[in-house]
Amino acid sequence: MRKIEGEQVLMRIFIGESDTAHGKPLYLVLTELFKEKGLAGATVLRGITGYGARSHIHSTHLLRLSQDLPVVVEVVDSQLHLDAVLPQIESLMGDGLITMEKVRVLRYGPVSEI
Image 1 (cartoon, rainbow, N blue to C red):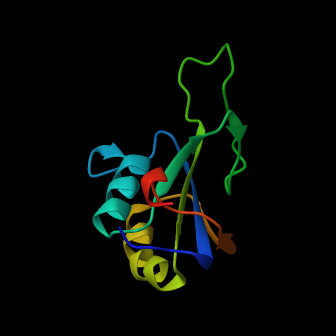
Image 2: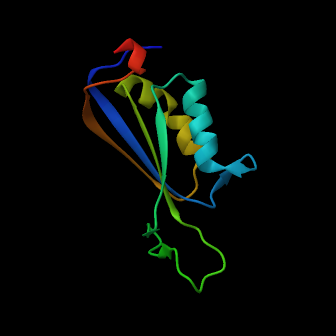
């Protein structure tokens, strides 16, 4: 396992739950891509409500039969590693938003290594 610490970058990718790539959910395709590229780790969060560039509200509502809830994929690694995978991310996405911000990694690794 590669060690990361100190100043790194958090990339957030805002997409919809129903977004797909290669016949699979986009959040899963992105997570598999990050693992394949050796990025430090990723988390997928499912939102309860939100809207994006088209101003269409997506939410859990009792009267709706289908849901396209907001999903946020977060991945932390170096700027260099994230910049290297960014073109692949953009080629997989339709609608969505990508942000990056500096973060300070205080701890990373399994309990046995800390």
